[in-house]
Image 1 (cartoon, helix red, strand yellow):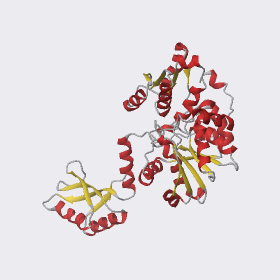
Image 2 (image 1 turned 30 degrees about the vertical axis):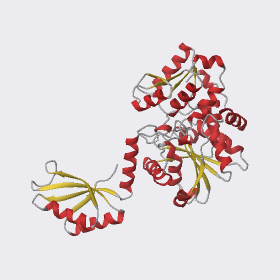
Image 3 (image 1 turned 135 degrees about the horizontal axis):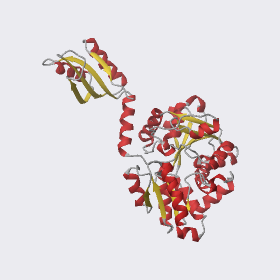
Image 4 (image 1 turned 90 degrees about the horizontal axis):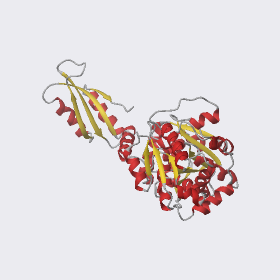
Length: 412
């Protein structure tokens, strides 16, 4: 890590955040904070949602990027800025840099999905692809910073950026001052450092709970003093950070009361619930707060809880998969594996049972060759849609009563 980051003083106070709020006012969306009656009923807590997925680039990152840009002198702005990012920081910095006439260079790993490159270029950023990993892209960005005389804008480990992100907390507590607990996603720690600083300056002080994906418990490990494995394919890629900020780490020690870890299945459930109930699209990181609440209901029951929906940039195909997997877990979609005898009318008899139980068939897959059954046996996988889990169970009971071997093909 560069020397400038090693010498950062862990100083961030409410005055910095209020000044940032005035600075960026009118240039970012003042997103709504709304009470959710249905999520409150589901979780047992009194739930407020902050819709940061309604920013122009669909994420809160605009706030910190803009604050950092506005605090630069004209000479630095004229030379341009650079960052390493394949996510929301890239778009937020590119959008506001271009709007202010500041040249923006974003270094991304060569493995970055094309859609993220195109989205960044669409809002004015110049994308440079370098390296296979984020660390390699980051190193190249720091090299270009020196060679080209650019100013590096860190996605989280910078007090100016964290102050901008903290304006999320100011707005939440202005709109819903009764909130007692804020649950905030943690990647590098910029968002929760800013929001936590606001929460502890509030009267009375507000409890602050961080949340990370269990696959990427980097800040959790630093704060708790545990050496945990960090890596894997997480739905919450926006907070999949292996090495959290040094500056943010120290702020978090002061202003965050606890950090919770959430499983992938719960993240999927939270993304699905927010779309079904609130009719709002969030990425995995944006749903992390709700996931923590769902997984720890007894801890928050009866409390007034604020959740930050920090981003809405999710691939549409991935979102479709999440929604279908959630339907499967709820018992509304299923794949049933049925063993049949390979003779005329065998499949027709099974279809009659589906018809009688009003269960809709979506797909049928036959397997005659690659099975351990006798030559006259076959395996049929039937994907189907039921009204609810009970309707599906009644169908399975009826099939078994007629002598069929039936099993679920389970999700991973």
